[in-house]
Length: 278
Image (cartoon, rainbow, N blue to C red; front, side, top):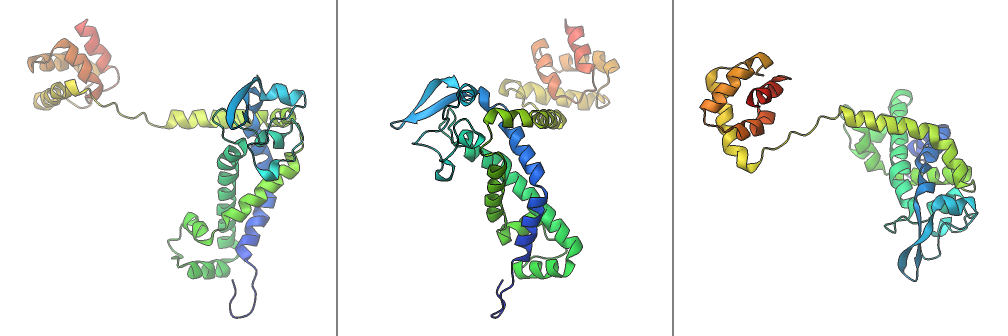
């Protein structure tokens, strides 16, 4: 910010760097956790423009101090890596020819920096309310409705912090052997895997769409349930009555079993109907 001729440092950018450095240990831990499993991957190199499998794993080569990255791929800033090190692994390519450093940025650096900036914004609101309000005004954001993500995008603070985060990781882990980094990250990687499993279990399963051939039968079945005055969801003790009205509506036994997943049934009712049909 340059009001008049007086230079004012980017106080929020400095605050973001401060929060990032406070979270350095967490960043290093996430980097170690991310590395778990790299050593088990097949090793690939690009030779004369062609991606080829070398026949060994990344871990085998790392254990013997062999280079993991080649001259035709990778990033220039990672090119002086010690063979078998974490930095060397970042500069290697996967089976699709993608440099692991690109995946690391996308899966670790970017979300971590975004979270760091959100934490910095929260701290700014609490500890520097006047400066925060002035910043929102400069960015054209409504203080009462400002979304931190929108503020961060408008201010473009994340990009320089990503670079700094990468430097912090490389300074701590770059020359360390990949196998040691993986070993350090194993406990947290198990926690992250458990969290991912829990999130997946908590997500509702998408409703199955009925087969096109059952659309007519489903229409008749829903009408039959409605016209019969059956309670919804239909309880298990109403399975006999439900089956009767569906058959009276002209549905074949195969159509009945096909529409059951799409009817408003209580738990156990569909099983009762299938038992009655068998």
